[in-house]
Length: 198
Image 1: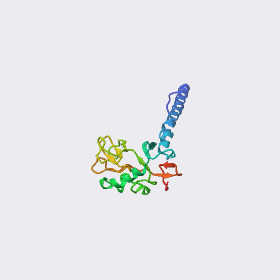
Image 2 (image 1 turned 180 degrees about the vertical axis):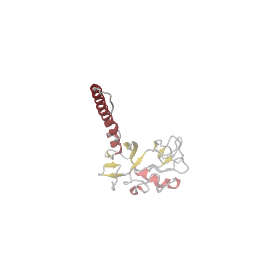
Image 3 (image 1 turned 90 degrees about the vertical axis):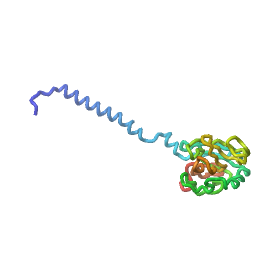
């Protein structure tokens, strides 16, 4: 033990300072720790998205956001569907067998969809992540072949996709456009982000 007399006011000051510091540290730690939890916006970004397609007319396409990605929903006309058989010999992966973006079993068909007329696909090129542009009209156009039947053109490096999002051969994009998991809640309501197993 020390022979130095204890200063009561100094001891009180040290205890008060220590308590204030501990309270401040706890006060600071609470928001810091809670910042590791996903925000409401982040939770919503990963949540399934319900879409009403009742007003979607044949030949029209709408875009919705799911997990920060643009998801295209297009109602194809009978003429558009007829082009899908004509493009198969020109496609890199006509049967959607490649595994980079696994195609759900219910979309592993020529039209890559549950309902033949309604295409649901992520509008991001599998090459470098650009968003392809609509080139739905058939016929010769800049950057497209003269026998173009309609589809999508990625403006970044010229990858082309048919009206089912299947990539043509000898293009920079290595894979077809992704088909997200989705399910019909009714004839006119889609849920994107879940399927029958979800």
